[in-house]
Amino acid sequence: MQGPILVFAESSGSEFRKSAFEAVTEARRLADLSKTEVHALSIGHKIRDQASSLGKFGADKVSVAEDEMLKLFQPDFYRQIALDLAKRINPSVILLPATSTGKDLAPRLAIYLNTVVATECTELEISDDDLIATRPAYAGKVLLKVKMRGNPKIATLRPNVFTAKERVPAISPSVESLSFEKPATKMTVKEFVTHGAKKQDLTEAGVIVSGGRGMGGPENYKILEELASVMGGVVGASRASVDAGWRPHSDQVGQTGRTVSPTLYIACGISGAIQHRVGMINSKVIVAINKDPEAPIFGFADYGIVGDVFEVVPALTQEMRKYYGKN
Amino acid sequence: MRRVPDTATRIKIALDGKSIATSDAEFVINPYEEYALEQGVQLKEKYGGEVIVLTLGPEKSTSVILKALALGADRAIHLKSENFPDDPSAVARAIATELKTVEFDVLLFGKKGVDDDSQQVGPMVAELLGIPCVTQIVKLDISAGKAVAHREVEGGVIVVEATLPAAFTAEKDLTVPRYASLRELVAARKKPILVKEPQQFPGILETISVQYPPPRPPGRVLGKGVEAVPMLVKVLHEEAKVI
Ligand SMILES: Cc1cc2nc3c(=O)[nH]c(=O)nc-3n(C[C@H](O)[C@H](O)[C@H](O)COP(=O)(O)OP(=O)(O)OC[C@H]3O[C@@H](n4cnc5c(N)ncnc54)[C@H](O)[C@@H]3O)c2cc1C
Image (cartoon, rainbow over all chains, first blue to last red; front, side, top):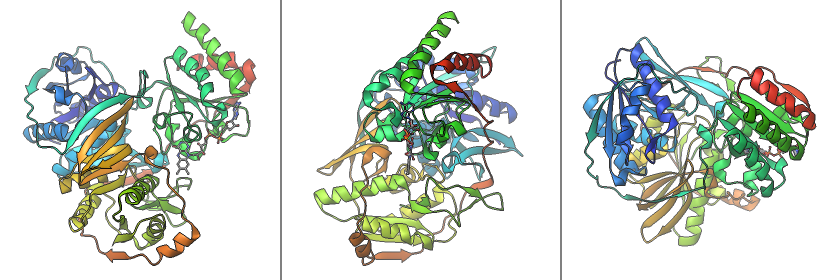
């Protein structure tokens, strides 16, 4: 494979996303295998000061496009900037995080570059000078290994699967500024409305405390919020509780919600239906709290407690408080 | 719109180790396309016009096309192909080629197919047609040649205005799909389906193997009620080492 590896280092506000560091780390690994360079692209607003931090994860070069208009993802603007750079540096591979931005941008680039995308990859390898991507399909019921003919190969990486690793010593990358000229567009990005003060997105969270129909009502999620807050995690939900209007759809885990892979997933009052399972089965450790010993969730949880969430969850929060107080 | 195995179906790998054995799977309209279709029908009910469904797929797609016609579409275009490449870019190119002959204001896709989870066809078709595309939308308002769409992203929604004609890909919360009555299912059989061959494009994405994910090691129930809680914290720390 000839040509550098181009990584889209996504930022949010004036900070890089964790998934950007993950993608740069993976790009470095591939670049070392195929003896090429890692060229990172950062698009945003007030991000230039951070650009050289990508060297810690292995970027040799960083191109930065900054503008007030680039603060929020605008497909036409981002596509234009990424395409101009790709045409200039002829990458062999383009990696993007499989975030809402990455998954929107990747196929647009692919069409212009006459190629296709391997979506939400969980593993990449180089074999016979070619990129082989592993990606889950049928909601994770199977894993596909795919190859793409031609260059560049474009892949989006599922957040929280690849590990961001800082190198010692860090590379001090060369940083260049890209000029941005607003291209013609038929889309105007108006505003970003946040869902609230949630610190992490489900797909990037290390700990998820998820509640299902067994929570009985929206007010009861308070006990899950408490547990999550003690553990530095976020709250998720099953579809039953989303459809009941107890939680927003952005909290839904599963086939028609988010696919998550936290270090720890605690399912509270969730039965473990196949469509829920596929969204969380790649969590490192799964804990189930359910009053029904026959609930399917016990069939694939690593640890289970048979019991009432209203008793077990507050006790667990208390126990965790003690644990984190000590450690 | 296309047909996919029902999400509750067990997925079996075919003997060649490179594809999925679908012979005994049950097929449904891709759920995300049901949200999109419902949005189309609601727009028609509000503003008039017509809803066309377009499917690229084998002969067997007829059942989901009939279902869509029962759910409120007026007519269908079926790009019939038994072995079209399993490649989103080829699919997008064939669909865009066909759409160049169709007039429309709003082009709706599902966010992704729940089979290959590729999430590419919508924005690809839009780029090929040179029209705006807002992906993963949970709300769509149309007025005076413009659309305002709410796009669900990490931590919130982004509000985007687009000039029509424009494309959108539906997220789950966009609409609540309706059910078709028996009468509508019967009436659907009288609605026109234009069957033609898609233009062929080569696939550049090649599947070299399909595997089942490695099984999770068996888990265990630690006990009942609050008594089991200290044990849970202990194993998470000492055995699983996740806290
Ligand atoms: C096309 C399609 C897509 C779908 N997509 C998704 C998806 O993305 N995500 C998803 O989650 N589902 C999805 N579903 C729905 C899925 O099939 C299940 O209906 C859903 O996951 C059930 O949610 P639940 O576990 O919260 O509810 P239930 O199945 O009703 O389970 C509730 C559980 O809570 C337990 N419980 C009750 N009270 C208590 C208590 N006090 N203490 C402890 N335990 C208690 C019960 O024993 C039970 O096991 C989809 C379905 C379809 C058809």
